[in-house]
Length: 99
Image (cartoon, rainbow, N blue to C red; front, side):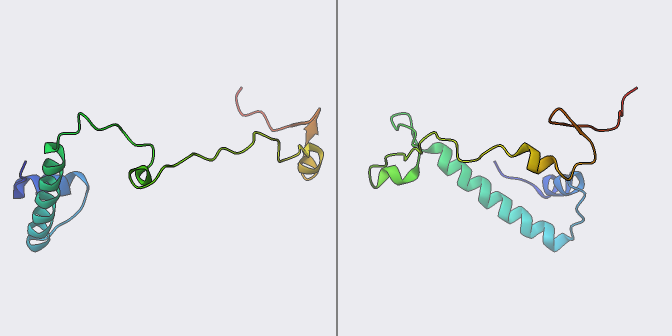
């Protein structure tokens, strides 16, 4: 898929970007190179390749390290609410905003 100068100008207009003629030509060249690379990657047959959880799996076996599911913080509600202007039953009181 090759873009045209009209396509670049339309994209620039939609993005609210002002491009000069030289900038538009340069961006057109870069976008066409990018889309060429995408077409090359899409042409590769990947039907027999299993997806990877992590790219390093191609080089070495990776065992995901899982941490122990343990509580690491303590609830200090009273300390946190000490500076609040209004608290009742452990809840912050705020002014009513919806009538």
